[in-house]
Length: 98
Image (cartoon, rainbow, N blue to C red):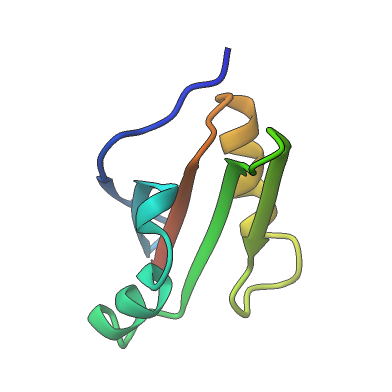
């Protein structure tokens, strides 16, 4: 059974001197959020994202972006977390500071 989120959740963590600010949002809040986060965090190195939603034909649509990180090392793993947790109609955006 697929799950979704109804409001934004933010989680901040540090790993090996890198700071990560993660936002999990309903898909309806995704559009424009990457640009907004880049504006709010101008010194961040990357703002990667992954999303999953059902289209009008009940097909799962997925997308992700590494935002300049090496190809496949940020957006795809984030997408795999959404898949693994069976989350739908939501997006995760991760602001990374080195």
